[in-house]
Length: 166
Image 1 (spheres, one colour):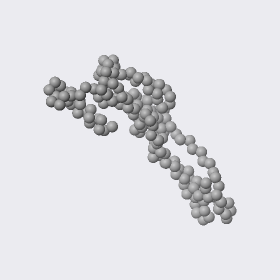
Image 2 (cartoon, helix red, strand yellow):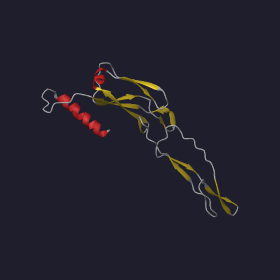
Image 3 (cartoon, one colour):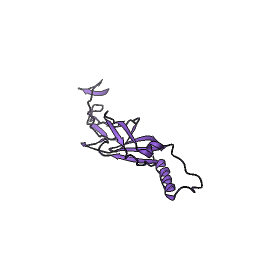
Image 4 (cartoon, helix red, strand yellow):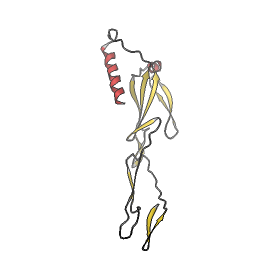
């Protein structure tokens, strides 16, 4: 509803505004309809400003033009190579694979180029898709650490650091 002028009178009318949201537009972007706000005698109508709000997705998280997807794998699967199908936002199926026999560290990311969100202003350019693997069921280190090398201890410390950041 909007207050509009017709001669010396102000009346309330309902008006429709159409808006085409461009691909890749990011949260916080402001869209302005000039002089589309209420009108009053002797005043210039104000602008109607819309601010884009991003609704959280159940599976993906957006970081600028990049998408982040967290995937949990069992320790056995991480030790032998991971392969699974991921349904993208547009309904396409993307097969995510790691090298057979390549050990997936406890928390690691796998980058798939140009499978993220379109870049605002250049919709033919896309960001990346980051698949973050979280390995469950991994054997833990004994408290004395006597049977494990320093490298294992460092990778476990890196694992906890990355886990706190996500």
